[in-house]
Length: 303
Ligand SMILES: C[S@@+](CC[C@H](N)C(=O)[O-])C[C@H]1O[C@@H](n2cnc3c(N)ncnc32)[C@H](O)[C@@H]1O
Ligand SMILES: [Zn+2]
Image 1 (cartoon, rainbow, N blue to C red):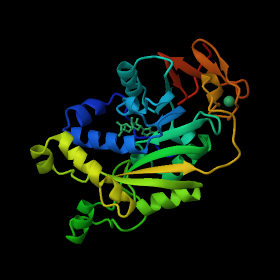
Image 2: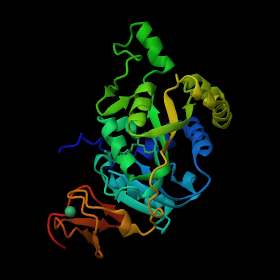
Image 3: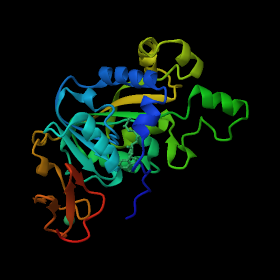
């Protein structure tokens, strides 16, 4: 079965150009506040989906281990530089639509600014549901099509697409904004219950960002974020969802090889070699290079 295309960040200087030089200190701080209010204080194993250059990873310090998953190895290499190659962090190059993990292995997951690139969001969310244990926390950030700017533009006839309709809008190729109700419906269909909703980036306006220090503007944002429980008109929304109570599986595994499955045949017993993982069921090999487990494509030839 073919999966939707991946938005390619290979070689991108996203972290530098968008965050560090892009005047987005306010957004970064506002997200930090939302995460702090939603994250469990501690936990064993966290999966960060679409981790990029690891901008948020240090914020998950309450977890014993964090798996950073991204399709781009250059983003993961930047994350490694920032966070180091310690046992605390596991770097995995893979497609969110084709996760290389066994079912019910993680007790938390986050996906920040990555659903944004999913042409088939329900399919991506289903993969995530599968790898979470019961009673696990999932923090999802999504770009909100029902934001004030898009509503005004629609009413003034400056924009054709309707911010009130439930379907996602692809405003640039492989960049999608979602309706909050559609997200709630998808999560409910997968058996998640929503515990908290925070609206984020209330003040994403050039003029305000220029005249008010980022720290202050973010603190103000933090003050308004809980109104997300009642209405959502900001460009970014954070949802804290939980998987339901079910049959409790073993403890979240901290043994790396026990986390993985073969993304081609779903075989669960991968064999560990120095430079690759071997699947004895379908005979595929998955490269392990520079501290990154690469599950994007099977290796062409045996090492
Ligand atoms: C906008 S960046 C966000 C990075 C990080 N979460 C942050 O907020 O700074 C989106 C990330 O999602 C990754 N991504 C996009 N599509 C993906 C897919 N299908 N599978 C895995 N990662 C994907 C990209 O490589 C990129 O690093
Ligand atoms: Zn296999």
